[in-house]
Length: 279
Image 1: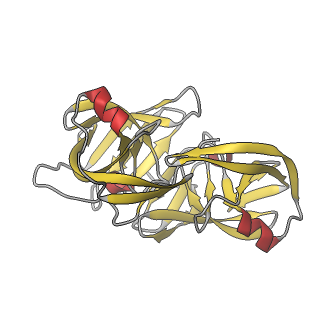
Image 2: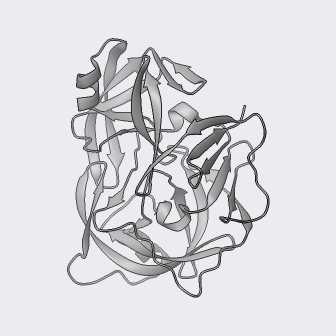
């Protein structure tokens, strides 16, 4: 299982420059990685091409020194300037101002660099204030500027309340009929929850089916796998989903990953605190 939810301890990584450009609307394609089916988008870091995971569960944009070497950029020197909390623990990090481009969207952010990372993460510090729609069938992500003309929310959509804490997107799902908050995380291949949540709600409706490792930006955590009777998000219901439960997972909420929402088309509207799914 692969999980994201990377958060800079110090700030959200947002930084704006006079050279930034946000069009009223933009659409970009994505491909799915062969290992975890991550949504991979083609970005440019200071003009150099680098595929990144489109990761709603990460508040920051993050790469490894290995990626800097890959695209021919000098790594940061000196002592680390920050620490990053991620699945697997806390790691030292450097913050480097960088211009990131995705399609015609160009923004300057504090790019977080760690020693080693499997896949670069494009997080909320780049696109979090935009409205965006992920269309899995077409392999496209459409963005709209706040206050821009037009909209892509269609009549008949399934509207889910969205809570915003900092840059985190939080939804309340029902696990075996009991409400439970989760981070809405396109960067997580599999859903995960803290052991404390299981202990709080009791294990009725949970059936242990094995053990696994959850790999995140800061390393690997051991977890137990439980099959649940049901998970519901509004009228969307999935039965028999297997969730990782870990004592080492130190976040406030669990991650609701792609194993739940799969190939559904959805729109994230942070300004109106709504998540729209399409039938």
